[in-house]
Length: 42
Image (cartoon, rainbow, N blue to C red):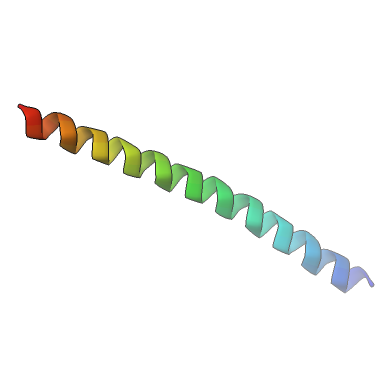
């Protein structure tokens, strides 16, 4: 019972950190796209 709960907790923590990581990657990607658009206009 304890093992199952800790596995579930670990999975939810992994999902939370994964979504944080994905959000960071999306922000970086959006910044990169904006930078390239600005750079191509110069």
